[in-house]
Image 1 (cartoon, rainbow, N blue to C red):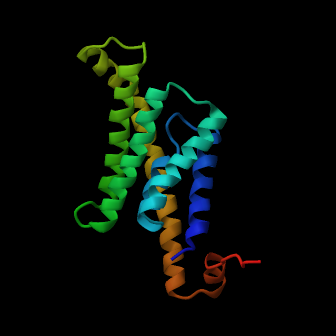
Image 2 (image 1 turned 45 degrees about the vertical axis):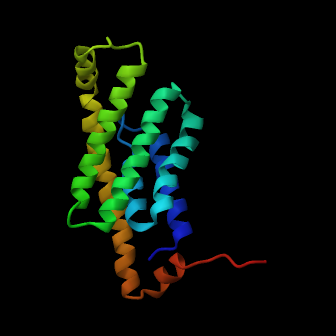
Length: 182
């Protein structure tokens, strides 16, 4: 298995770069990073990696209404938990189902938060439906980004696992590097 620290740093790095480079709205690697961490790195890391990544990038991009922000961060924490459960029960919760569910869950929670806490929408069922309707292009973009990034990240981590089981010396040394104590 890849070195845990290197995996954490790599996933945070992918998340930061993916959020900061120009991209279509909502097509970022955060959901894929979250699910990759859930599957390959560990429970606590799976919860902390997306939160740390979001905090760093939001500090650069700019924070917004804290109530909406809580909805976004809570969504990723719950997606982490879903990924952790899926890791334990892969036959009940296959990765493809978890990935699609995560995108839909994020869409529902964050658009509800925007409807509830922003002045942009009438506080009625029709206002909520209008908010969800206007958010559909963002859901499409998120699904495309989540699927693309998940395929890439899962592919890299699975490739490393395969190469390590074959005991490829160069790769094994690179991923097993541990700093020496001075």
